[in-house]
Image (cartoon, rainbow, N blue to C red; front, top):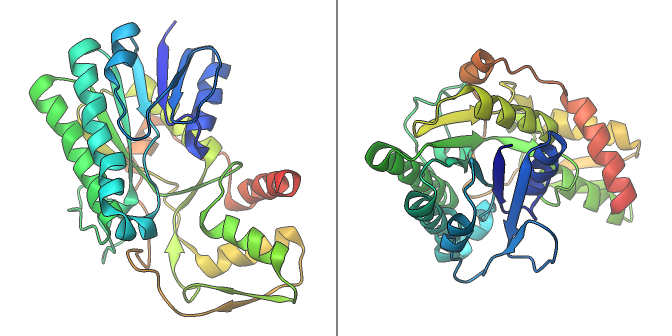
Length: 300
């Protein structure tokens, strides 16, 4: 039975990954800074994580790093913290794997933020990274580190450039903000940043899990980068309208036409590699949002 280690298992994506591979019958170990006492769980030190003990104690087949900071705005305010979480920790993890568990495959969760604000769409993996935020730069550095460990030390690595993932458990970004504003609104209108003409390439969490399984079972890990999205450009105004329609609230949306620093205007990914692996999305945005909104209503 394959042994999996999920770093950042307490987060939105990490928690889903842990449950998914447990349900598939794998031997799953988890690690995070949250203090818990449960089987196969490792408490990590938030200020100085020592990953050597993890790989010295147990030999894993796959390590998925779903930890780190994932907030573009905060990366401007706390760039050193963002660097440590998104770059330094990747080096520490790979150094520990190289020393104690060199046959372990390593999946690095990077971000579409490495592309910056692209002028040509769809975005291909071959495009030169042009990040416009500390977060984007630090994710790019993490990819280079993964490539370094493969090219020099033959550690099996891969970096996934995640676009706009959403689903149950997510407590930030567009749909979470919409939910909170609608819930707390005393009138029938709310304000949203931007113009509504921005676009994103959304992928539901369950489809992301499908991608992970395909990559683990079908790809050789050679330090490469892969886009993870649906290859569909959706205007923010259309996504917001769909959300409002599902929640069935008579809300008027006002856009303030102010852009967010460090965020691109338009995104759509080229997912040729995913399609070659056999990826076919199972959830369109409407279906995914219905599941997410049901979760929001039950838990928040």
